[in-house]
Image (cartoon, rainbow, N blue to C red; front, side, top):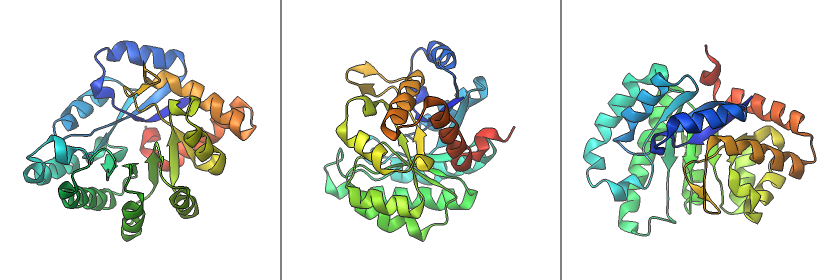
Length: 253
């Protein structure tokens, strides 16, 4: 069984087709991550409609630019997440972004939202799906202040020195279809032990012009196996066990 630990399922127009393709490629579970205040309910609704979709709720760092009211809405969002705790497998997508968000005046609000999300993960004893683009130093300085069961860094692309810190701390790293063309992603896979790798599509983000879907993680797995000089079956088994450790609520039923 393959598991996509980071996908924006609410952004697809053809969800049934996406899920059918995923199932045909042995992708049986998908973590649907929220990004905005408005996407929380949609993610929950999808998880109740489809057995293969599992919700992760949170506020993405780009929301401080996209939603001028996010600070005022934050407490309401947090209450909504707490009220839905029984359905959740993680808090995400959360983090900081100093790469796509250039306006430094927004950084304090990003930090406020991020810390609120980390506190929530600690309170609910849930793992987190992290976005770290261009803000690796601050994120790695912040994380030790919180007691969070497990931490997954999605599509990590930062400096290797923080990658090394993450490895030492036992963090996990989810790998997506960018592995097919990105030397950076290939290097990350070569540096991180197989026992700390996960699979993600980050769909519907495009990879070389092609819309990402959960089905693509099958090819991601094959590429990881090639880099690690392992056979595909062993790689799949190891990553499956990793996923069980990081996101145990995917398997609670």
